[in-house]
Image (cartoon, rainbow, N blue to C red; front, side):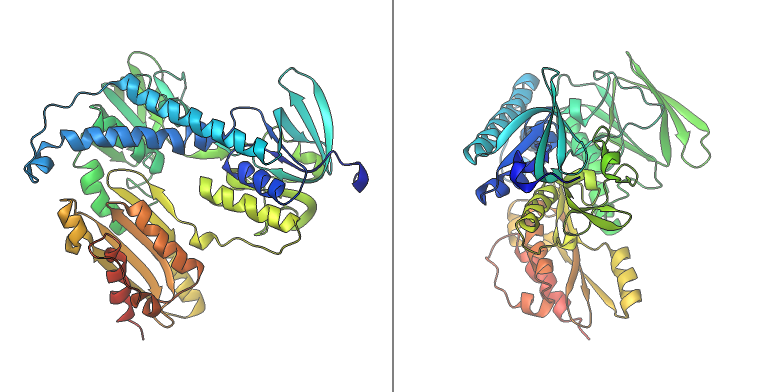
Length: 481
């Protein structure tokens, strides 16, 4: 039975202090709710401690090494640099220090907002009740009006792969950069695999990339992939193989890898490498939450929600229970989790808000970067077929952009998808210099459901990379029916 309103310990308890939980707790406290947040590991979750924050620090440092070591590129400016030297330990310390600073800032922000931080493992104990197993082992039950689940995700390790954290590891350990293997195999060619391949090759490692699907970079737009492959894979010391499973990986010196045909499952080759990074995606951290106590059935481990972040039971929302972030399986991105957290709290406060996943951008921070927002070309075609309109597609090239040419970094492409009837922007995919920043302009346009005609009238600063987007809008406006 629900607890009497007058007797709640808290208005809101959030389980998980990653970006989704952090934004939810902070937003709720700033709006007058009595809030507690439960965290069993480090404050900040995966993104701050083992994900986007430390990996971007490593990418920043290794990117400088790559730039300074590219004698051919520098000579184009008339610059001749001495041989590049770097200290692995100091690069690792840069990432570690950044993590510590952001984690401390996040914790202090919550404390200043009045959020009670509870250290331990949280679980549901029936409606409006949270069980808390503290670090000391003490177990107690707290009551609250609303609960937000924000426990995130963990790296997925396929069957047959043994992890030892030293010679065979996931991104959780890779961000520590404890050593630089002479030859490392990266299993998976999604954004995690690509980013770490970028780091390792910049720092002098030889990389073999293993992808189970029939093409490398399978989740990216095919036209973007074609160009990115030429520079990020073929132009570097990377041997990329697709259609192969790392069916067995045994840690040691060397690491033994058994490669099998992804279709027939027959063993086709064995490799001996110095290390293996397993970058095969992530799985929700939903075990141990005692979801049975409120009759929630997981979908492949994910907690089902509606667009208001309410948890669903048999397709219908249940009162006072919400979920945000990777555990929901919607968009496994830190900024998506943060947006979900804020929306959940707004709905708790009585507002009626839903999320627009189409307008949330994603980026891969390689050198150069890859970004996207909205629909893929396949998704756009499916929508066009369903709703009876024609899609338009234009390409805008960095090689025609003055700023990119000034940087001697003009290998880039933007692909824009739009409706030919109304001109509404449906999606965009970018490969090139600062693609992660450029995509935001298109994300804002999609959020407002703007059309390419009105967008083509907006004046962009010259000379900037943003003119790549302006050119695309102008090209698109000429194609309307």
